[in-house]
Amino acid sequence: MTKRSIIAGAVIGLAGLALIQVQSGADVEQADAPEVEYSAAASAEESFDVFKELESSSAAASETAPARPQRAAESGQPGVKRASANTGELRLRPVQVMDTQGFGRPLVAATILVPTHWQTRGGVVWQLNNSGCGKNNPHYNWSAIAPDGAGMISLLPDETWTGNSNGIQSGQCPNVMTNNAREVVLNYIQRYRPNSQIIQYYDRTSDVKDVFAGIQPSRRDAFGNETRQWYGAGQALISYQVGAATVREIIGTAVLFTAMSMQGGYGMPAQQYLTIGILPGYAMRMPEGQLDLNQAEMIRKSIRPGKEWNQEMARHRAKIAGINRKGAMNRSRIIAKSNREISEINRKSWENTQKSNDRMHREFSEYVRGVETYDDPNSSTGTVELDNTYDHAYRLDNGDYVLTNDHSFNPYAEVGQGAEELTPTR
Image (cartoon, rainbow, N blue to C red):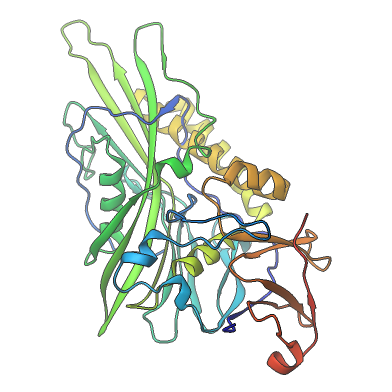
């Protein structure tokens, strides 16, 4: 059997993925609202996706082990490495995504595994945005970059956009009125990858239905005004140039729409207001022919939230919500409610991943595939999650992990140190 080994540094800490500062409370449905124009100015800041950007898997069960998932894009898209072509070695190390600005002391916002020799930059950015649209405060602006500059992993900002049926712009912000998640996701991608070419788009709405399951049904107030919500998610395989190199990148995010319809009266027509909350995006790029979507997903799934940062963010959001409640007009209240709701969704989804591996599997089984939980008494949680496309997992004496399909793998011969083979958690 051809040997494929991944040496991954032991995961340290729990990193907080505080996501969007959008607060709301109304129903979520996969429905369409009146579709109108969506436009937004492009920007080029790189920086995370809470939804799981997975490809369709074509797996056949066996009595001894689940079949390896293979992504649709891997088998049919140019410039993307096939799963079976993964014959090399990938070394990973844990890094911290830091917030050094928000709470008077540096806090770990997240940890993530990245290739060993890649350099990281950025973190959580606190940047006041008085425009009323675009990046939320705070937001992610983080990346890990390969030595050649072509490979990169990015955590991208979350955003908020608004619109109304009157066609009135708010300051310099565009009047955004669309019910189409695909349109929003593709506009988002173009803002951060303005010169990219879309090779293929994947609708991921069904993958995030559990994340949005707690939203209340749509409701009307005593005056007949209705508030409702719907959601969508997507990712795209894109291509663009980095210097002289052509790269392929998988990039995506999820979107929550909050619409309010107000009854007309006293000679005034009915009015509609819309808030669009875009969750943080995740992206990974590699030179053409080297993008392995399984590895991209494995790295994304290595992200862990930071408990202390999450707690600080919860207090911050509560304070902001209190300020908003005191002086907001109707449209401002809609935005505040939408922000609170998405923040609560994100907080609960990440807390659930920490409660138990069983709970995580149940709640994310529809869109989290390709991971195996191993017993590891040296881990702070007693277990560790590693890619299940490998048959054997070892913990080296120095704390690193080795994943391999080589049944005759000899740690002393291969890496010069002892190792303990891990067993899957039952």
